[in-house]
Each structure stands twice: as C-alpha cells, then as structure tokens.
Length: 300
Image (tube, rainbow, N blue to C red; front, side, top):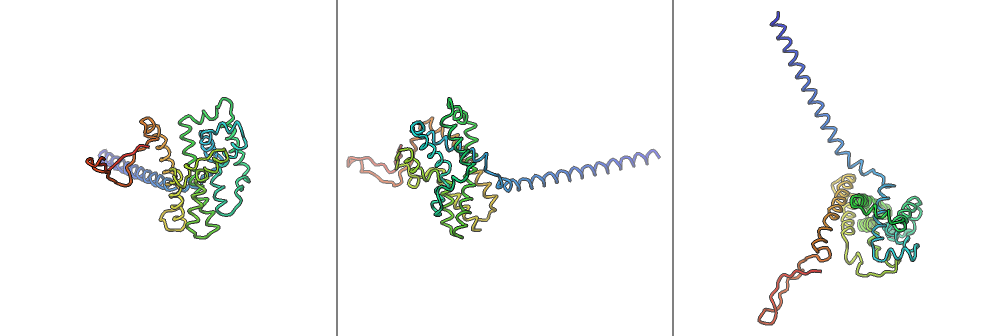
C-alpha cells in the first residue's frame, strides 16, 4: 500500500506539472498575441491623435523661433510689431494661406480659427517680448528644441493629408491638384518665404524655394505624392500605416540632421559642401598652357 501511494503521488505531481506548463504556454501565447495586436493598433491610434493644442503649440514655437533667428527680425519687432506679428502668422499659417489661394478661397480663412490665432499670437509675444528673453532661451535648450522640432514634423503629415482631402473634395481624382495643394499645405511657410520677407522689408530673390528647394520642401513634395497615390488606391498600404511610417521618417531624419549639422559646422563643411562637377570637362593639356583636370571638386 505504501508503494501504491508513492506511485499515485508521483503521477499527480507529473499531471500538475504538465498542467502548469500548459497554463504557462497559454499565458505566453496570449501575451504574444496581445503584443502583436497592440503593435498593429499603434499606427491606427497614432493616426487619430488630435493636433490641438500640444502639437500645434510645438509648431508655433518652432516657427516663431525660426523667424526670430532670421537676420533683422528682432529690429523689425522693435520698429513695427504689426509687421512682425504678420510675418509670424505667415510662418505659422503659410500653408493654409497658399492652399486657399490655389483653390480660389479666401486667404484670410485661417483668421477664423480664434483659438489657434490666440495661441500663435501668445507664442509670438513670448518669443519676441518676454523679459530677459526667458521663453526663447528655455526652448533653445537642445532637448526641448529637439522635442519641439519632432512634434512640428508630426503636424506636417497632418497638413499634407488635410490638403489632399481638401483638394479631392473640390477636384475629384485630380492627381496634380491634390499633390500641389498637399505640398502647399505642408510646406507653405517655405514656399511663400519671399512674400514674408517683403513684409519685413527684405528682398532675397536667391532664396526662392522653387529655384533652390530646402530639405523640408522636398520631403513634403515626396509625401504629397505618396499620400495622393494612396488616396487614389495606387499605393498598396493603408492610410494609417503610411501616416505612421512617413511621420517616423520625418522625425528621425529631423533629429539626425539636428545632431549632424553641428558636426559639419565644426569641421567647416556646413557652408562649403564638397560636390563633383556635373560635367566632366578636360582643360587644355599642359603643353598648351593649361592643366588636365577631368574631375574637379568645388567648395562653395
């Protein structure tokens, strides 16, 4: 009887151990499934983020700080606060102004958004007129500056998609119109930079974005093309997934650029990029009074 009792106890212990292992496996598989489901839901939840007030606030802070860092902007703020305020509003709402002009809508429609105008005006006042320049110095601190820059890139994606949807409501399936309006909504502040400079009494025709596009304008154009193809169902990716991937690309590229620009400036390459000449021209041979150079590098 003692031997039978020992065998039965051993069998019960084995059964309990196997049941525990099965339970652990079930819990592990359930946790993995939950993690996978949550990972797939992240882009969908991200695409539903509201931009107001936090992301819009970051956009206004980054835009007005960029305006203050322009040459002569501080002098304009002292001489004519109205012109400075109007320039700041063009920096903040330039995309809405340009896209409205392209669709034959009132360019002052952005002024109807009272909460946004009040928030942007408050940021403008604090950046330019805060005592001891405390507000600007706080956000000029590198971690805060990077945070604001990343949040600003998030708003760029939302502006591109909003511009494309707005254009599609006026011109159904007009690809070029959707690309143009989405591009204007996302990079309007850069595209109308010449007009903004005229408001401040500055004229720099060499800074025309159509002649020499900056990186934000280029990447916004690429995003407008991608979202237009996706809306026309020619791009095999869901909208929320494309929004998430494109925004991650914008934020990562912005942060990497912020880290590598000081390195380039420290070695003297920020204002003097090295490039190869587009045409490989050979000068006269040495015996004719020249030197043979088929590949040249130029420093600007």
